[in-house]
Length: 165
Image 1: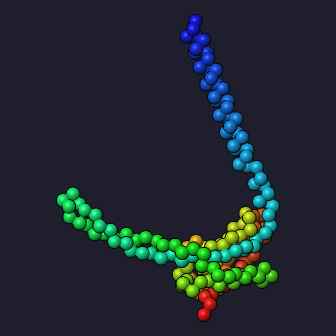
Image 2: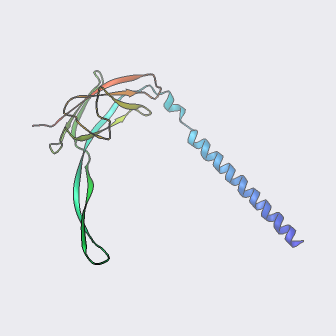
Image 3: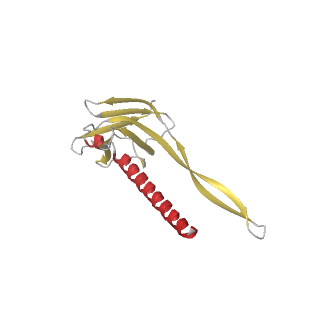
């Protein structure tokens, strides 16, 4: 009789554990959905901030020894990031122009741009402008389309970068 009670107790614990896990899963799912509808109604398509970073590839020499004790020399490419090249910014929301002055150590022909935009919006390059987050040429003005979270409103922005003399 003791074995039968033990089996019933195990089955009951298993059911309780299952119900607890199920409730936890449902509550996590519901909390992930909460508040998402607020972004869908957002009609803003602004560039709030823009910055650049420099990425340089540095070759590093490495030496290891093989099983016979002979040295083997090889090279590894390492990417060095220099973030925050912006020294000043002017955002003209009437004409949709972002003018960024960057630090002299930057090369406008090979820098990475990144933007802060309105919540829920998306940004895409147009007219051959470089993709943000990838090395690109910003020596001439570049154009980006920012589409609001509602998918309806959009603006074309021009980004101008310059290095002071």
